[in-house]
Length: 288
Image (cartoon, rainbow, N blue to C red; front, top):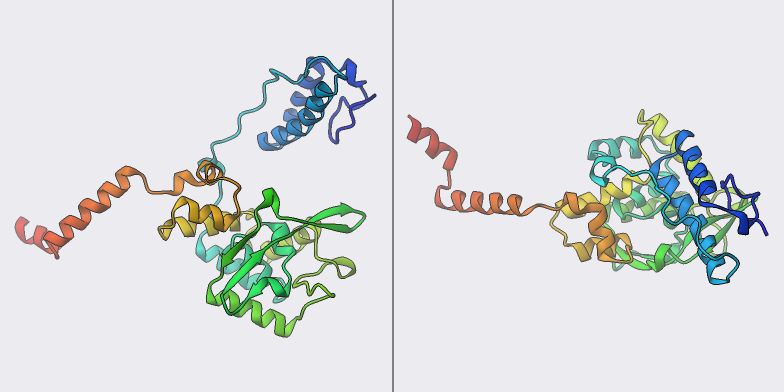
């Protein structure tokens, strides 16, 4: 029996013959090939799931990946790119009119790529000003797509700003919806777009905006940072983003929340402003 794992260079080795040295060599090859630490870890997790299953089924005595050192990723606060509001505006202005609502759903509702692709007309509640996120699009091979529940079971309702509702309304009026499911966005064969199609649309859009480094997922970070800056608590942000746990939200965005020092400074500043309504003028007068 061979270990059939995509992108695994030891996939031709019989499962019972896989050794730790095979796994270590594979990891080193991925690093030398320039893959990001996160990608290496994701691939290792896929391999380990197979190995753990083999141990449970007693096909092998132990997991040969145990103890293999993986590359350390950069801290989230250093690797996360949050675009400025002006940059998001430039991208929206450069987007084709039919693609603009898709970009807006990522930037102003925090939807993941597959979630935005799977929006149907019935998901938008214009009266309550909410969007019901209840499915996502996944690539199924040969240009086909698979519709599944959202990642980690993160079905949720997202509050939409009036401007986004107006943008969606114009899209429905001018572009329309497709199919019996009334998809808002479609790719090949009248199906909702998968990640390759969306990626192609996005690359053209960011090139037109002159922002080649901006990632579509950065718009989700932009949304999260805006919620935090507006004073939303962890649970509110967690629910809006569809994270399975509040700890996931904290692990990803904790560096964006005000620290105790920030709150103390702001509180002291408020006290000073209350006591000296024109504190700057008071100080200048005192110095004079």
